[in-house]
Image (cartoon, rainbow, N blue to C red; front, side):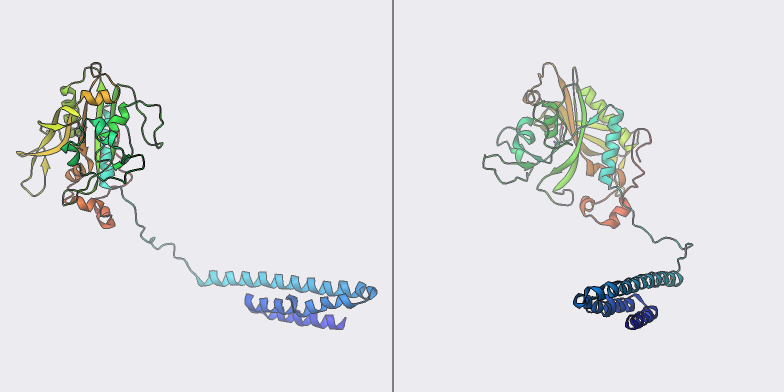
Length: 370
Ligand code: DAH
């Protein structure tokens, strides 16, 4: 008994003297650890007679419990004191300004894409989307590009490896294949949830998206963005096309006096085809729209070719339509005075800080464009 009392007194003193959690842990190991002093006493129980164990058992186990409880209490005390010390040492000056936080910005291409969609939405257009990875049929054949026609080559296509079944996928060279996907009504579900289903005429959609061509210089990047437009209805003619695009240009540039002209051109998927130019002034090193005597080409357009309609299962005797396609990045550069196309895709945050838009400047027909 005296031996236990002594051990208890000694351990109690050591627990009280432990100045930190590490010292306390050392005491715990010395007493209750595998070869600790209390554990050694517990081991002696096995060799005792049953009577002796009856009295010694509760004594030794009682000591173990008391020491354990004392250690737990001291640990709580030390931890609380540690926290108090930390709170006393650390001060927080709530009057200091917060550290500057980097804010994200909306890339001009996306901003302008939304602006364009907002303008066309005002005119009753919906939005359709298609896949970046296309097949020859949607990108060329259905759009009335004859096989081996040189028009295919001007597109400088990125091709994937030919598959065992002979099919060669490609990165779409324009957004025009989505015209086909929009007009064609098939029973197969679209390959991804964001890809639009085919729809029955009347159709009025714009189609924004990424496009790819093997082309890289000051005015071309291998990836760029286009917005396609497609209108299919009865009795549609060039007058509808001209009004729609002239209205778009004035609204998009927010300049009522924009003068435009339509020059005859060739695209396999439209007949007649045209390019639209807007009048501008390039004299001061930057392009000013709505003034001057020079012309700037901004888009391609035309009446949907009867072959394209037929390729999509539409009867060109019943349905007519027009289509157009324009470069979103180029329009963004023009509208916001961005000098070099390559900077648009250099992913330089300093550039984005300068040319980017706040997420709160979301263009809409109600709130305005920018
Ligand atoms: N797909 C053409 C290109 O990338 C642009 C274009 C021209 C689209 C005329 C059209 C169109 O829908 O009618 O060069």
